[in-house]
Image (cartoon, rainbow, N blue to C red; front, side, top):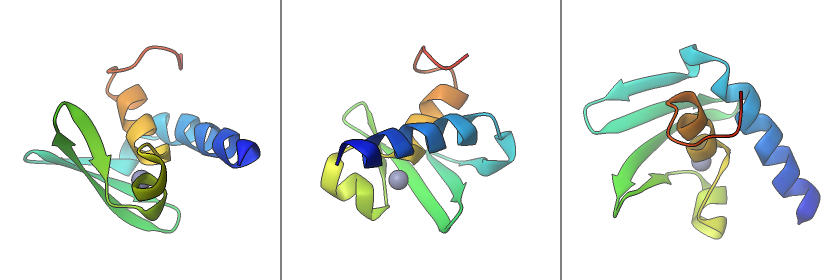
Length: 77
Ligand SMILES: [Zn+2]
């Protein structure tokens, strides 16, 4: 749903500005979300998240937030 997608992008933008949400652990990144922790891992050059939204849409607020936070994706600042 379109508004759902916009909501995720807005959430990602807020998360990206809060460094305390991200913990790098070896090859993985732990993202502290409002509803729990999610784990990002690298697969075939893409960040993959453990949340349900990612499984359905192949992106999510957590992967987007980390890419912005880590400077891997232009467009936020
Ligand atoms: Zn996620």
